[in-house]
Image (tube, rainbow, N blue to C red; front, side, top):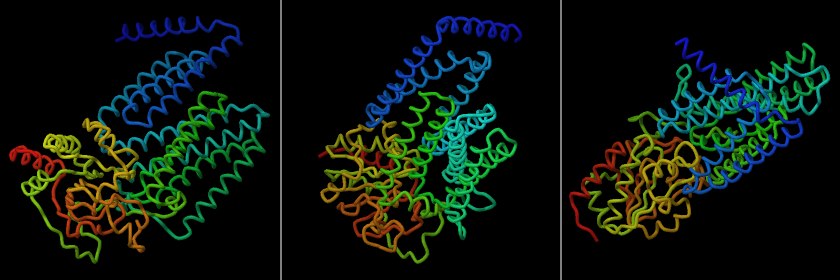
Length: 500
């Protein structure tokens, strides 16, 4: 073991010497080279982000953006000599092991939780760096640097604690018997948030005026703590139905935190990267709000959604829906006689990990001449694109994945097959003004000739309300685990054989 450690130390020393050689340049030449690499990195970020706008090119875009970040990190470490290369190598190894473990072990259904966790980690990193830079400030610092440090601290801590609460909500955690997935509200809550926000801003102004004093350090620590509390209070009143919007918003916050940290460190590449993340996250937040026909303020202040009920729990009180059931054999006969089928996936498909079974069902129907397409609501699942990612993983052709544009097709559709979706197909959103989802655009599955709903029970979805679709005359229920039910459908279709 000693020889291995000594060998690694020697290798690191050689790497350091080799790395320093290219930078044995004049300060102007070194700065020009660093800025050139940063420019290349920024270009890769922008082109990579552009390619992420379509599923077919998203992987290439992700690779380009990752390559840009690799260049930026490498040139920063090589140029500035922030730490010894031994420490850097140790950090790279530990971080790579953690990242690889998360990537390999986290299930696709837990991807939203992971995104929330990583958003929070980014916010915490920004806050730590900002506080560390505050501790290094000279006696008479530049005002813009102090302001950047304060903003990075506030945004970073709000992002961290808010993202951790979002993680808990998505994970279904409980605190002292209280489910985090349900909105947690109390009297004067929004006024308290406003008061804390004013206090944080006031403390920031005082820190800028008295930087370098003991009282300024105490106020900076107070900013850290109050911002952490504010992040918790901002997210706890938001219910499960709004989690896709919250994830987008917190992702934007993490980018803004990184951007302000870039100003703190005077790092142009970090400013560009953070700006791109912040802007794209905010745009996506706006898209998600439009998909739910709600304003961002309404999402943050509304406390919408009550979270999932446990399997077997009773539906909303007062529900007297009469449903029609169908087994796999009967459903297969209906599907085989159809000429067009639209499959509408939801979080239930993700929970059951039924995407491969669904893809197989679509392929079997397509071989029989059935026109199969997928209708995917923008807020289906726990994060934007959740269903698209799962179906792409199962090699469903991108051309079959359509969003709300498919609504015009339901009038001419023989079978609309809903797999684990709930609120996004509830007709109450169109006409029931007292419903919490009133006005939210939905997929008009109820207009199809036959609606098959694959669901474990009649439990409400995130909004906690009864789904009118289940009691419609043209709706039949296929109760059970989605993966099992769809697998049985495939077996029945293969057993029946035949074609159009």
